[in-house]
Length: 427
Image (cartoon, rainbow, N blue to C red; front, side, top):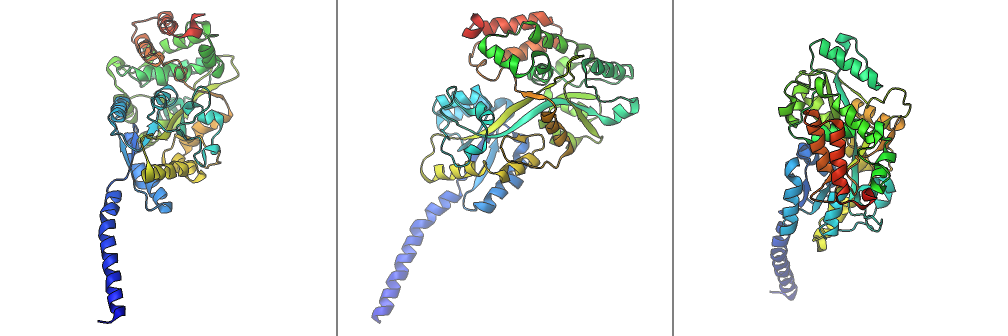
């Protein structure tokens, strides 16, 4: 055997051994994709079929898997996984206090140095930044806008037009009721809808948006002052117009009732667009929350809703892969892709994007017509576990609509619990 041939055989043998050593590592890497934790289980097909393939077109070697939990169970399940060290790699972040608590407990990583994080304004990052502004811990993804959906065929049949003022709104509700049509499709069984798409939907027009919300934080406003009380009073007026048996109607039931044409108007938000368009066989329109008569400025709940952070436990190549995915999410490509893949979830990026869905574009157009704010209870005010402001609003709003509380009693209940622990409200 020649010396050259011996050398070649030795080289091939070494290569074969190296391939054997490398193969298990490669197989292990491919069998363990990055896992995204989320409460948005309705979005599974979009992540699987649209968003992740677009990422893999640029980064084919990084596998990603979207593994959502039921929305109502997400917070509890996620906290349990994080504490046990079994949570996914990328964590879908609720706005403000819930995610801030995860960061402060060391479960979410700081993203201050993430390439592309500068593509978001301070307002966009405000829901996922520490109180002192020193750390941003989630990449802002989208905001949702509150308003009202309506069955355009029923409106046309009765000669109704989109209401813009409070008196016009109740005139429409009265006309629907007179025609034997259920005016408002919403239930109180799950409680959160009464507050989120009821009180927080119409409320900003009464407490002047950010002025009122920030007033609660700094102690200059109260839930039982004339402005917030007016919002409770306005919500109480919905009671005779709600769908029959609304006290037992849950969120999915209300969605189904509206898409089946069992009622004319659905108080909701832009996040409903995809489901409604897929299930309703009638034309759907939307209108923004009507303003009190004589008021010129309109306010909308344009709520910073969703972001994505990184599990702080990640190290090495897995951490670098997660950062690569998060950095890709800061691009204009992702902003436009996400906003069009999920109509009604509006990118918080500074990038200029074009929306293809007419209903989504209608919601988005309200930003140029009205002043934007976010839900009053989300920043700082819900940090007390015993007297959680968000939970109090759920309970008070549902009990108000069920006729168990007056508007004054509902406002006093929420205010009293806030004063029990929150210093600025005790002055």
